[in-house]
Image (cartoon, rainbow, N blue to C red; front, side):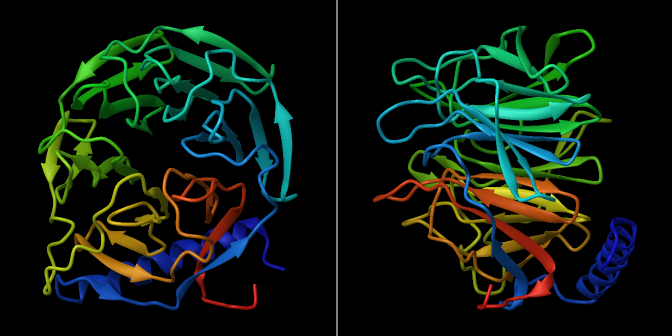
Length: 335
């Protein structure tokens, strides 16, 4: 059995080799349909749902809120991947909601915004895993919204985009846990949007996709917190054929090592394709398809060298399954 230290060493070597190979290629989108393996793990123990949130603290994932088709939810669960087990934790004390955002910073989790079935929300809450308790913090200062996105850089949380009930948005705000304060930062370039995806690679955030004016957005942006600047990258459909496969809304997105990934989501219908982004080459490569049902509004998170996609919905059903993505393995239909 490979111990944790050796797993990290092998993974780092793999990322370095892969980056070198990709840089030797041209700028077109390529395909490795057997690279990466999806493995089904122990089902999420809460109700089936979509529009939930997730954050990671100390190699544990925390998943909660969402909508089960009848009711909005407040239950929260901790997932321990080493034991492949779920544990119920303290319920979220705010109003039940879906399509909120969440991030982790400084050893605590943060959940806010969303939709309660009547109005959009701007309240925010902090979860302390040592105490298994929630505390309300400063409200999000932008317009109340749902379908926004969030990420963490330098132990500070960032929240932006989404829909306020009438209009899509592109503004962004930074939260500092040490002072319990929000400040507005530069708005991202391009169009307003809801249901965008994002991931963080080497201290830089990448944001793209989503929906605006009924059109799936093709622009893709990188944010540098050191300069508070957004830099436009290659469009999501910028390849030799012009195919728009990467375009989507409400995708699952995550980073592993020096690469970003997206999977599932919705374009004309719900999707199962999986893509890897190489920031050095500024290009996308198609990997093994997600092996669960096609879906949107799933949660996703990374723990060590595996990523996980769970819950979500399609037109006919909501889900409680969870799948681990193992980037170093090849597709295996037997697992």
